[in-house]
Amino acid sequence: MAWYSTGTVTVAASGTTATGSGTAFLGNVRVGDGITIAGSNAQHEVTGVTSDTVLTFAPAYAGSAGSGKTYRVAPMLGYDKDLSDAFNTIRLNWGTQLSAMQLWAYAASASVALDNLGASASGKTVFTDTPANGRTALGLGTASTASTGTSGATVPLLNGTNTVSGLNTFTSAGIRILNAAGGVWYQQDESTTPGIWNVVNGGYLAWQRRVAGWGTAIAAVMRIPLDSSGGGLQFNQGPTPAADNTISMATAALRFTQYFAATATIGTSDAREKTEVRKLTEAELNWAIALADEIGAYQWLYAIEEKGNWARDHIGMTVQRAIELGESFGLEPFNYGFICFDQWPTKTIEHAAQYEINIVPATYDEQGNLLVAEHTEQGELISEAWVETVQTEGDRYSFRGEGLQAFIIAGLAEQGRRDRARLAAIELALNITH
Image (cartoon, rainbow, N blue to C red; front, side, top):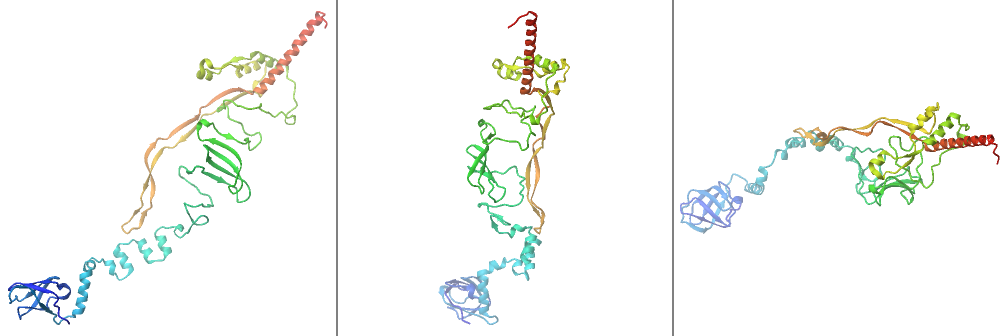
């Protein structure tokens, strides 16, 4: 083996320390090696290697003190110096890392290594078992192996156009579509049947009938202004009931204020749908004549409350007075369609209490196994439960105006006939001829 003599050393008289210049003692000198230093013929034993530039020796240096002295280190027998130097190089370069090495790094098996790492049972399954069992251990569903896509059994792309089949239920407060012309397209199937486009556009929530496949617009069906000042539901095509003669417009409790129309209401008067029209009885005619005498002017109480002196006069009578007159002639007024009386119950809507929703994170044991999945819990009370009254019980009398008018006209006609008969009798008695 070659002797090491790179660089020079400085020693003191009778000293036991050599300070090197240009030396690399750590990688080339070992305790027990022999060292000779210029200025002395004695050979010394290396007793310690402190650094690349400092080593100690014995016995003490017998020469004179000085620097820049040459030296020679002789490796002693008893070990393989090349092997020792190679290992020493590893120690110098990687000693810190090797001393910090954990048990898992040199475990006998992957299972033992995972134990040393503190891996959970599910974690060990992921590393050592089949992919399928690993997904099961992690609680992953079929989505973990599904491809992304826009239709079929795939994970939908949120930045693409997706086709979704099957019934989808959303339990959130709502679905928000934020777009200048965002909407929902309804079509029965992929045929040529037109569909409905429900869209927010131009300040309206509109329903449009369009050519199949989200084609061009055929007609606007109806729309609702987003601004309340624009009115309520607007129709571009006349609404029709789903079944003939089965539903009413509004109720006695919830009425419209008035109707505006270009022409009068058309009511069915088909002989094929009625019994034979009978003549009115004497009592009925007397009632009709009496009703004509009741016609006068009145004002609505709510109009007086709202408008004061600006409340307008209306012409007519009250249902209650009409009933009294009918009964005075021995008639049952409610047998006649122009007399109406409706009652309704109180209607309420129960609103549940509202609570904050807290998200509770998942919990795991010391091995990382899932104990309780992430879930929600009821938080602090936001608002108490309450009952909203949307309709208060009541009743109301009303007329069917067209029937009442026809009845009074029949009475006036009878009054005319009676007057003419009396006049003719008077003229006959007075022998008046024309």
